Each structure stands twice: as C-alpha cells, then as structure tokens.
Image (tube, rainbow, N blue to C red; front, side, top):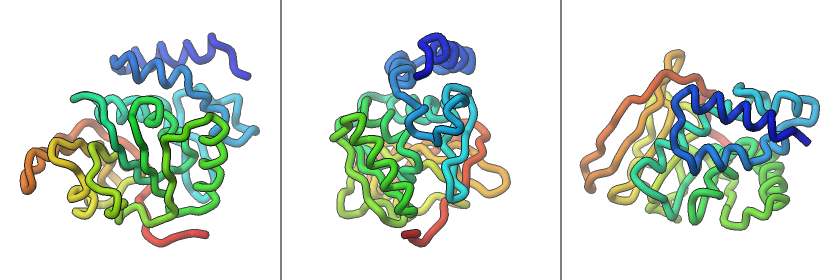
Length: 211
C-alpha cells in the first residue's frame, strides 16, 4: 500500500503543471493507480510517468489523465461518456467517479478483462465495457455528452464526432510522429469547434480486434 505522502507528492506535481480542477485532483488522489499496473511496477505507480501494461500499450501518465479529464469537464459535469481505449482501466476509473455513466471500448480482450476485474473490485458499477474496434466508437449507444480517446489516430474518425451530442465535448490525441491533444465542441449538427491544446505522445489508435 502506498503512503499518503507519495500520493500527495503526485498531486503537488500536477498542481505545478497547471491542473486546477479540484474535483479532478481529488479523484486522482483517491484512485489507487497501483491496482492498474503489474505488481513489479507498483513502486512507480505514483510517479508522473506512463508505464507498460502489455500488448504494446501503456497506462497514461497521471498528468495527461488529469489534463484530459479536466478538459472534458471544463464546461460542466457529463452524464454519459464514451472512452475509446479502456487499456488498464485507470482513466475509466477516474471518469467513473466524475460522470454518471461511462461506456468504454477496448480492442484487446485480455486488457478489457483485466480492467473489468479491477473496476468490479473497486465497485464501479456505472461502467459498461465493450470488446470492439475503438475507431468505430459505440454508435448504438450514441449520442454521448463527452468522448475521450486514449490512443492517437492519424486523423480523428468522423464516426466519433458524429456520436457527440449537441453541446458535447471530445478530447483526443491526433497525429503520427507529431501528435497534438485536441478538444472539439459540437455546436450544432454540422458545426464542430476545434482547439489544439498541447503536444502529446500516445500509442497509435489501431483497428482490428485481439482476442
């Protein structure tokens, strides 16, 4: 079990990096990140760094989890959220504490199954997990108040934008060798307002299922 001092040190670092949303900071402090990584790496759980979780995937660094969550919630709480790329389930857990209902898709079944066990252990029952291609989103559950993408497509799939509700927010990394974190607000059926936030580095958003 990690000490409160270790977690407090992480939160102090996030504040130094510009995270200001107190609800997000409190959620990061309370979410046991060590449960979402291999035990061999647990001593690094509260360092502000990405860590491998297998299948050439990573658990994002706490800063980027906090930043993307803060951007998603900047204009108010969201009832219905889609996460593209469950991965370890850590970002899912953070969203689950701050949103009414989270739908999360993952193309790699073993990752999805591990995440499901962790989220059940934490009694997060407002999450629905799906083994499906993330680039397609989850059309049968759309529209969503918010969409968060945890892997980088070269260009954002139109299918994801179309699953946003009017007034909805989408946060995603986009690009190849050079990636930018972007936020899209859907103002109307046909008008999407895009803002570039900062440079980032994510694993690529891939297609095809892995069982």
